[in-house]
Length: 118
Image 1 (cartoon, rainbow, N blue to C red):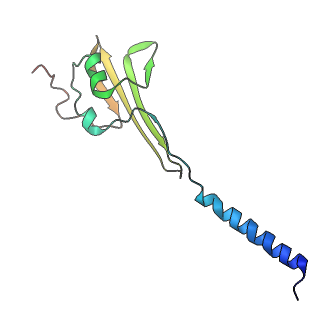
Image 2 (cartoon, rainbow, N blue to C red):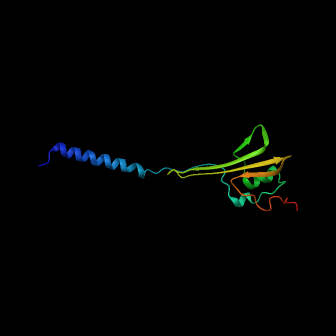
């Protein structure tokens, strides 16, 4: 016959094993931060656009340099609950309140250097 101590040990061992397996079942939320930009939005940018036009297309930047009002930073990060992280950056540069360049993780549209006025 099985002793009571053996039954208790088996039950405790089964409980410990089942609780350790639950950690992989815990739902972890994804945490998005910043401006979500798509290539199709960046493709709308053209040289010589005003700051207001850029805000209309992309929204307000995540960070503006307080010492350089002509450089805007757009950043998007997604911290996945399962460890799959995603980041995209875009730096928008102005001169005399007109768009002169973009750089970062997005491609420049072939027509970027053609102003909208033409």
